[in-house]
Length: 298
Image (cartoon, rainbow, N blue to C red; front, side, top):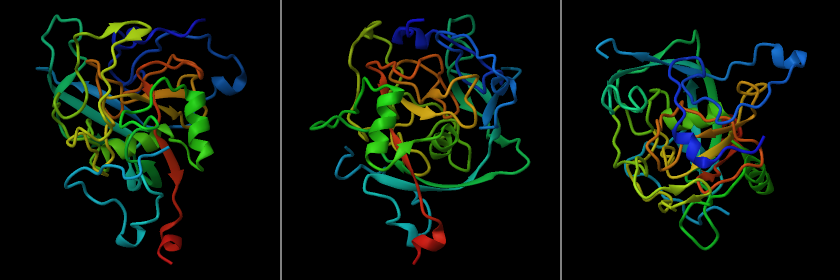
């Protein structure tokens, strides 16, 4: 089946826990019938969206102003240049309740973009400790400050591995975006269309010929996660590796959405594009294992 067009990704809406707070496949491929695929996938984390009843790296990567420093002081140089250490306790299962929607009732995208969330609630019995390095920004084009686009899952994987890194696991990407507070948006609980490169609805172009609305990486200073990771909502949609055996049969997952009016929440995801799909809206961010803290402090 041909890869779905980029334009379809903003017309597909699913709420609730059925897909972990994500989007339905843009193009459903036949599910494998092997025994392994029929088994319960390894848990990778999800968010249930409860309805309120009223209801190469840049030489110097930008760092968000006033962003908290991740990890311990002794770990300051544990990650390569252009990366930041993410360390803390991740909650796999989260409830995020929308108190107010951005779009009016009866509109096409009602119950899609949340204007204001209640404080997130961890539903897991215990959290998972994580420690890894992640790119501060999306990978950039050579000789440019714009994020590198037209990247597939395969080319992103090769790019990361060629530099001794790897694709981020989805759970890692989520934790780097939301932090221990489980923020729905990287910058907090209330949607701000000016914080990140999002919610552009005019002059988008058409499938296969999108108008380029990329912003320079790190240029939206308020689009910073609790760890100081930039542009995890909007700008480009980023490829990650699904945890466990895959997400509903897919190992290729897109995170963060791009510059269109999408959900842009940390736990949102997009599946349905195969490993070689690339578009004007797809980009790359890499992760890398960090040495244990006792090793890093020596």
